[in-house]
Image 1 (cartoon, rainbow, N blue to C red):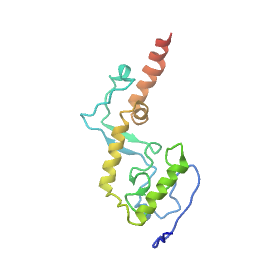
Image 2 (image 1 turned 45 degrees about the vertical axis):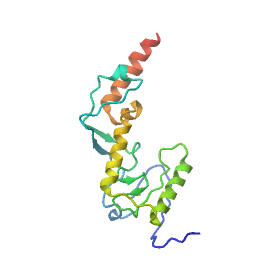
Image 3 (image 1 turned 45 degrees about the horizontal axis):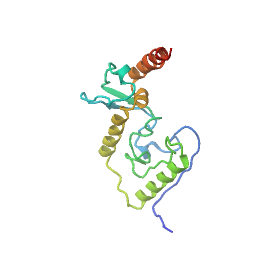
Length: 170
C-alpha cells in the first residue's frame, strides 16, 4: 500500500463532453482544453509514400493545420493525461482507444507516478514540441491528414472515393 499526501481533491466525472466548468479557471490558467490548436507545417515537409499518393500527390502541403479536440485531446498535456500548464491537474479520459479501460489504467499509472515524483513532467515547451511532432507524424497517414487538412480531405473525397475508385471498378 502506498500512502499519497497533499492531494486536495479527486473529481470523478462521467459523460461524453469534456468540461472543466466545475473548476476555477485559475486551475488550468484560463486555457480552454477544448479549443483547437494551430500547428505550423515546415516548408520542407512532404507526405510519406502511401496508397493514395498516385491520386493525391498534387495536393499542396498546408502551411498550418488545425488540430481538432477529437484527434489530440489536449495539446497542452503530457501523454493526454497531465496538464502542462498546471502539472497538478490530470485527466483520465479514456483516450481514443478502443479499450477505454486499458487507457484509463495506463493514465492512472502515469498520474500516480507523477504524484509520487517517479515521473518528471516535461516543461510546457517540451510538451508542445512533442505534440507538434505527433501531429506532423499523423500528417503522413491519409486518414489522419484528412482530419487535419481540409484541402486534402476534399481531394480525398473527390478524387479517390468518388471518381478514381468508382471508375476503376467499372
